[in-house]
Image 1 (cartoon, rainbow, N blue to C red):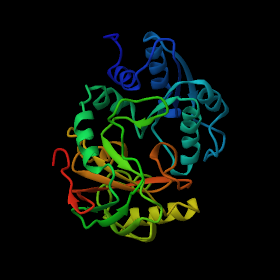
Image 2: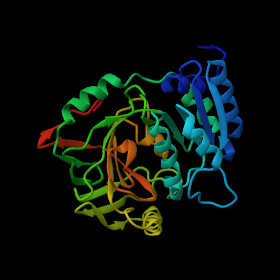
Image 3: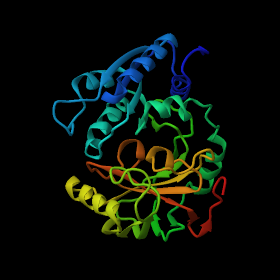
Image 4: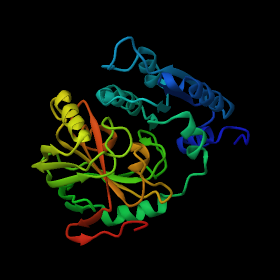
Amino acid sequence: MDEEMRGWCRNLIAAGRLEAGEEVLVIVDEPLVEQGSQLAEAIQRAGGRPRLELWAAPTRPLQQPPPGVIEGANTATFCVFLSQEPRGDEANARFEVLERLMAHGGRELYLALVTPELLEGELSQPQPRLEEPARRLLAQLEGTQEIHIRGRAGTDLRLRVDGRPWLSDTLPLEAGDGHNFPSGEVFVAPLKDGADGVLVADLTIPYTVEGLLDAPVTLRFERGRVISIDGGRAAQMLRELVADAGEGADVIAELGIGLHPGLAPRGHTMLDEKAAHTAHVAIGRNTGSYGGDNEAAIHVDCIFSGPAVEADGRPVDLPYS
């Protein structure tokens, strides 16, 4: 690959497994227009056929993707979506992009809360090879019926996952896949009535306070639904987000286990949820690439530290623990 290409462009092109002549949709929000142009140029130099589209509209939130994005998603086989300022209430529109791609075997890399500084810095560095530790973890988890997960701050949650696929964004991006970048997690969509216990997020929750949480946020689950959210300012903001989002927003969506040894929590959702020694439980939507069946207008990851996992009563050996 072109040695003069920006490191982050090179990393995304490699992670997306770009093929010569491939039609590529590049989506950016307004703060990243320059970076979108840089990526489109790099894709063209690598043999792809880029189409750059802006994630914007006269009024927000977007109820569906902009027309140019829809047109591009209907034909592109590869999409890179860069967002510096994602909105929690636009999850449905973002999911629609991936669903349109998946419908014809397309694939997507999604980067949220990214800045030019992050792209030129950490995301331009060589990325670790995590497929092997992920496959070892998947081998321990596949076929499990119940997960019992605890956390350093007090998480004590039982999740029913029987029949649900265990997935990982560390595996090669294939047709019909959607991955976040950087990669670094193994995840599953629990059954919508299959969550009981307490989740205590002590690191990061997107769309609430900026950076790390001001105070731990405690969510109590009964039969898959959140019955209470307690804590400080972040907890109040999460309660409001869930209430505004409506049906399905308070339902268990995902369990994810981080395994990236080079990341440390810093209040950045897309990095913190990949970091080794963290896990996250999400509420809201988990259809499509998550492997679940709960529809909702939001998908919110609640990230916590020091996870310990049992699968059907057996301790799970987490990578880098």
